[in-house]
Amino acid sequence: MSWQGQMSTIVRYLIDDIDSDSYTFSPHRVETTILVAAQLTQMTVEFGKTYSVNVENCTLSPDPTVETEDHAFITLICLRAACIIVGSQIRSESGNAISIKDGPSAIDLRGVTNTLTVLYKDLCEKYERAEMEYRAGSSIAGQAILGPYSPGSDNVSGSSTGGHRGTGGFFDY
Image (cartoon, rainbow, N blue to C red):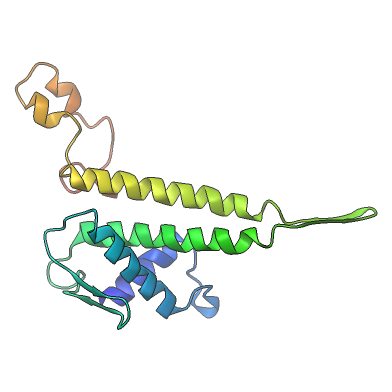
């Protein structure tokens, strides 16, 4: 499976656009958003591989989903793409925020963006946390300072935070 198939599927699950009979976003829009997210993320994060992103031609090379998958790249880019898409949904829906009252009847669409805003904040917080953990080497905060034989290091190295430390702590959502 190419990056278009795998990463688009991940993004669609993150934004709850998984019904293939009635996608809200076209495959092309999801793919170009992934590429925009990759371009923006590469400005702040240095990955192990150098990726060439061409948004206009819709290309990404090398493909991060073949041979040895770059899980960090895939995760960060998909989270960022989901933030971009949900952010655009909020902007679109905010124009539809109206309230109409006619006698005993009322239509109020002002709260439509509230759910999207909660999803947007959640996705963006997960992205920021994942980016910070990746940039920190997916290590436990303070572990480098304490070391394995320092007093109190047994409290830091315990699994009290959950997740899969040592295998990419940003996958524990």
